[in-house]
Amino acid sequence: MVYERQKRLDRRQFWVEMGAAAICGVVLTSDGLAAEPSGKNGNRVTISNAQPRRDVEGKIIDAHDGCLERFGDRFYLYGTAYGKTDGFGTANRFVVYSSPDLMQWTLHGDLVKGLQHGVHYRPYVKYNVKTKRYVLWYNWYPTLWNGQYAVAVSDTPQGPFTIHDPKVAVKEPKPGDLGLFVDDDGTGYLIYTSIERNHGISIEKLTDDYLSSTRENSGILAQGCEACALSRRNKTYYALFDGCCCFCAQGSGARVYTAESPLGPYTQRGNINRNEKGKVIIAAQQTHIAQLPTAHGTEYIWMGDRWQSTPDKVKGHDFQFWSSPLKFDEDGNIAKLTWEDDWSIELKP
Image (cartoon, rainbow, N blue to C red; front, side, top):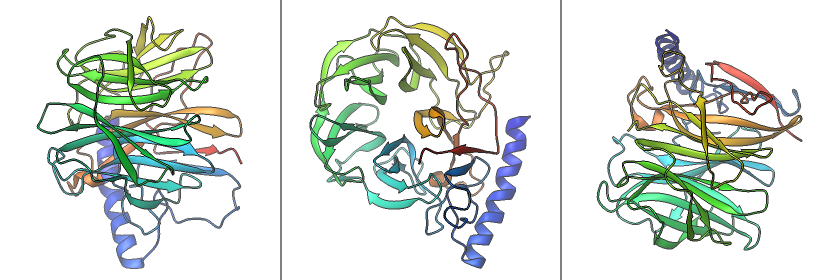
């Protein structure tokens, strides 16, 4: 019922917004609302899941299956741009948008110089304090589904990134989806899917410069899964992922595994995107767990791509769901996701 209601809302609001932008020339913020004068509401911003996010030129943001990071005083949204394609071809490209407040987004264009000929997905970026460089990992296929990873570097978060290694060796064969995590001590980790190991999920420690893997591996946590993310809250490490959902409209769950060490051992602790009957709550596929600095401390945001959601059928216009801050109980369990048309947060000055 929630999903059907939201589809109707999406269709109605999408065309309202498209018409308003085209007829009136209004520049909309990422939540689809006209930007308010700076400082009117301080650092409090509103995030909407019911309206298409737009850049400062009024264009719908085309950045999927990537990540949201805070570098310096700006937020950076990295993703795959699909345009009008079906997502399985060589036209996929990586882009980055930046914003001072999660509302006003500026497109910086293509992220990587000299991208290889192939099919590309899932760009993830972290900053390395030791080398003072931004490091990008991504998945690409010379031919589907012969997966491999590439690493690129840049002196700035918006790039352009230069490819350092087009085929990074990892322990498990034919890697697929991935996520990056940097621990409090600066150690980097890769969480990823091995297509050849029945889409098995594992976690691997990176070298000090984040440019390669040590191949020190957690072992397979689960199989038949993809769209993985790794994060830490207090002393607990969280690995989230669920069953394969290749651009599926119904979305996928988000199993939660926890451990006291980034390489485990891990214990499964429920699924925050499936209800008691096992049905998906938010019709989206997980892409990232973002950490937002707020006036009340770090908050954790679940991000998912809502494939096949846009009324105009343009893949690049598919909606992305950003949850309100995740809720944790005293034992570290995460409460199930709930649909919210919009929500507000007070960012750290």
